[in-house]
Image 1 (cartoon, rainbow, N blue to C red):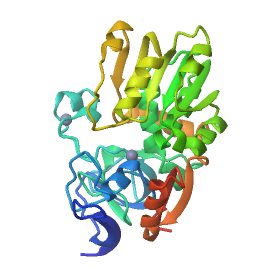
Image 2 (image 1 turned 90 degrees about the horizontal axis):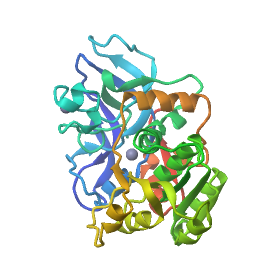
Image 3 (image 1 turned 180 degrees about the vertical axis):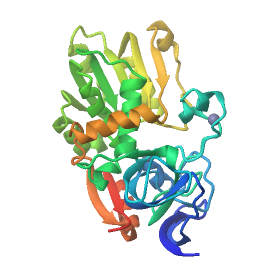
Image 4 (image 1 turned 60 degrees about the vertical axis):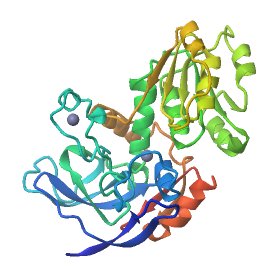
Amino acid sequence: MKNMAAVVHHTLTPGGVELREHPVPEIGPDDVLLAVRGVSVCGSDVHQYHNSHSWRVNVPVVLGHEFGGEIARAGREVSAFREGDRVVSETAAVICGTCAYCRSGEYNLCPKRMGFGYGVDGAMAQYVKVAARCLHRLPKSVTFERASLTEPCCVAYNACVVKSRIRPGDTVVVFGPGPIGLLCLQMAKLCGPGRLAMVGVEADRERLEVAKKLGADAAIAGDPMTWIRETGDGLGADVVIDAAGVSQTLRASLDVVRPGGQITKVGWGPQPLGFSLDPLVQKAVTLTGSFSHTYKTWEAVLALLENGAMNLDSIVGAVEPLEKWQSAFDAMYSRQVIKAVLTPLQ
Ligand SMILES: [Zn+2]
Ligand SMILES: [Zn+2]
């Protein structure tokens, strides 16, 4: 069996990740073997590297779930794609295909769902095995570097467009100017809000500048309540997107949301809340969780990438060969770059 280079999460200890030789995957009749051309580093990859993740990881596993590439080989039952096609892949690597969610198109919620990079081998490698049902054709004008950000753009689209309802003229607040937050800002902008604020902490100063460049009317380090009181009728935001995830942010979200408004939580945080949810009741707020994405979201996002509606240049701070995975991870961890992309095959 042939080997390839892969970034493997091998043990559940801090630093339990290394670049090593790994067998080239065997594919089944419904799979393709994808030659990976671009894989972006997710905060979750960095968490797994530091062993600070809060989800089950099937070690050893190849990291990476945000990727695109060229089909090197197609299984014999695959009819919609062929060798040489440029594609991106969804993240639900394994689903049962028969539960109520799978059968009704919400396969992102399948109880048996397993994603690339923690459940099954991901794309920080020269090759990855992908079920053909996960694939989408990549428009010619979209480079593989940009294509590797399709997945986080889909996360933002699901949160801002599918799970939230932003009407033209609305006041929108996004918490957390990380990669997902900055992409949520851009998705929210595409919905035509009247006013939009990005909120972060002191350490986010540089990212808040990026938020301004991306069209935020206000970029606030700390408490957004002054801005809220001075904005519109002063009663609060119609829609709040929580892309930070810590408990404190949900508390702040409940402060800034207007009565009858909506909070969509896309950021994760394993800590318990530690405060009362009474304002949720009193303000009759709709609190919605947003997880992953499905087919139509991918097609919509690819159309947006094709027509240049998303500014990804201000998000991608480094493009490195696979061998430089560690410095790419470190640069994201230390906030030197917002997002790094690895290019396994040149
Ligand atoms: Zn991700
Ligand atoms: Zn299912």
